[in-house]
Image 1: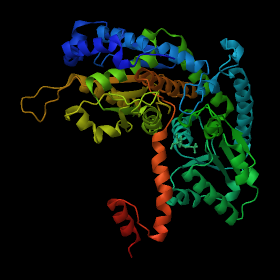
Image 2: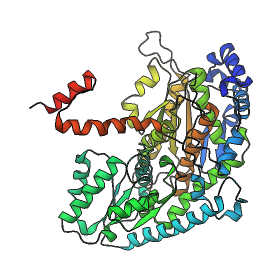
Image 3: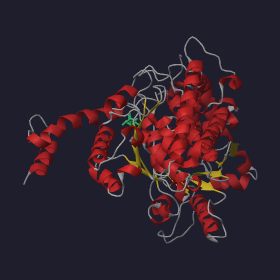
Image 4: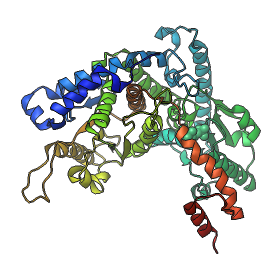
Length: 526
Ligand code: F6P
């Protein structure tokens, strides 16, 4: 697909001219004073998610130019190529079809297999695997002897299921404790194993490749612990979630649930990697989760760009990163259940779009992924919000709030209203600011934020929220012309660790830089 690089489009030049002329000085407070309909114009309903974008540094002109940029960069064609199953992950020659994992049967969607893809065949495998996995999840839920489920995986094989299991804790089966072990630091696994009995434990070894150092090390230790503790029946107490079923079998695990190379690790929660969630919320709950995501897929595929929430968010990200020069975004879920949301988004966005070359490997002269960081509200308010209000850098904030609490309001009267009041107040304070001649109590204001609102945190709304962000990351990646679906940047450290580990035993520092050699010697000194 031949396309113009974003910074060579007429829209990019127009955006720069607009930014230099007036965009830089844009004041959201003045914009609200001038336009009584600003909230309506800059908010967007999407499946299960309402977004208020009106406190952002945008107006009708900048939005129109951003939409022109999307069109000139071929965003719609790139989106359609993904949904057509084309090999858009070109550095790995793979299709990107995580959306298929949450598709209802193909006939309803008008898909047809083409020369470049085998969507119909893939969809059949998806449905068969999903059915088997959900039957297994129900079997585990019904098995009273299994009280503890330990997911061993890292990155996409940990962050998604962990975040979702915590988020949907209110829907989880009683009597099942879910644990997540990711770190190679043995303290993490040891801390979990200490509390377990082999006969009551199910280990899920979650690894797309079944080669990841952390996961294989933890899996081997878990198996050794199981056997040393007198555990019987690996087939009943270990299952593998992987594209590499042969490696799982070689490891000694016969209960396996597969997925495919067209599912990226950070997009794999919808596949067998979602098994911990399926065990927690059940087969019906998991299907609702998939349906929520599918509704967002349909919105992304079908809504006009101007009414398309992933598109509007992704374009805002480009506007902030490349024109305003904002280098980070703070993620503020006002929901304790969403406490792993910022960590999950870090992988989704920074591993996808933290790239410095375009899809053809040519260096880019503009910035790509911002830094994402955050903590749940209201905790963050008592930690770093000081900097957001009065620091020298502008950091756009993304609030996520849930209208209805999961707990019965009468059980804990007042909590939820106070939580929501704080979310609204922080967004308001960031924008409004406060003048004070003394300086110390002066808040500049005009600090942008987006407010995402869910009616309730349910399997369906969580599915939609996640898919929204997958597509938003797709949008900014497509505008920047990068491959959002590879992750070569994590390889070098893995290779160097393989070289260093034996040196920690031998003490050999030859060929190392002075710092690494000095640290290694300090680690080995008695
Ligand atoms: O470190 C990079 C990465 O490949 C992630 O993209 C992935 O989610 C994670 O490692 C785990 O990989 P796997 O599921 O193959 O163990």
